[in-house]
Length: 157
Image 1: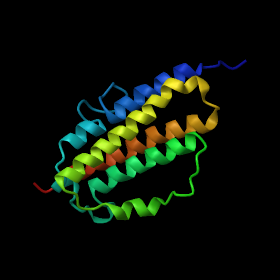
Image 2: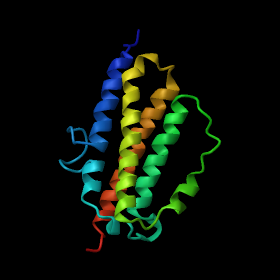
Image 3: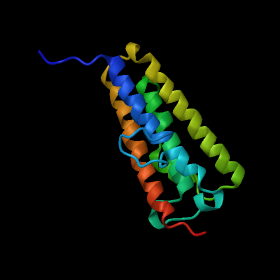
Image 4: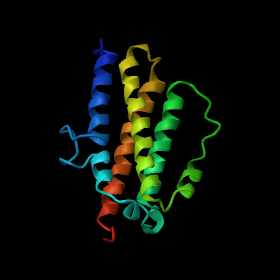
């Protein structure tokens, strides 16, 4: 008989990786000081607004990550997804003011905290939709963190 892993243990693993990706390096795959919020704290609105060829701006990546968190959260709970337009989010954000940049980061943090809190209720999850959504959130966010970190190498002072 295959070994069964309690959902609470899976949730603990997901929590560990979410914290690593967004807040604070836990030793899974990032270098110290390179989580998403640590990285964004070092980027000004002017830097976040710099176009990077076909990659958009850092601000656009942040808006996309936040959008993805909200979409996958809705997917986790079987909510209506008819509003989803992946292309639209990339075109809505380019240049941001300091106030807009701060608000974007605050919105992202709020979405992240809300998604992370769902791990506390993992015992009530129905199965594959919640698991695959949470795994998608981790992988997708880590991917965009990598893109943002690469983009910081090309920022103009």
